Image (tube, rainbow, N blue to C red; front, side):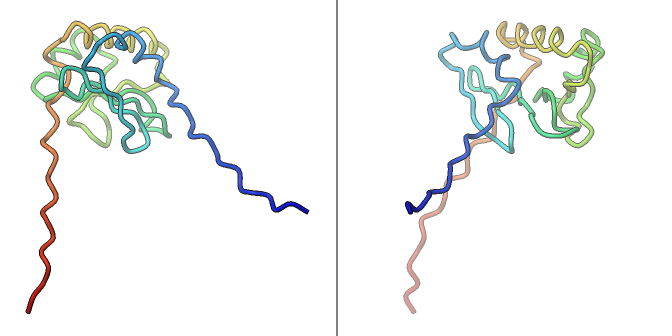
Length: 134
């Protein structure tokens, strides 16, 4: 009897990745896995987080400075501060207008709307480990 090997389970695909398609021709596009979702970077800015877990982490988080919230909410009142991470706006997947509002947002991102996105903090460099010599 042959020994069976454990099956490798494929990672689930994020349900919101279709929103990245209009950005794929952009040479600066980077999509990274982060905290169970996908972080989208364009032109060196973190512009979108595709959340694919349970509420309140199911929809789109819009990384942006708080002083820009009101202007974007005025254009799209469906966006609101995220209940756990209020420094960013949120569009829950459960909203009836999710697809339309998400596509509108991606057009704004592609058009380089300066209100949307944050410059990610510089990565901390690991310090070289010193050997201990008593």
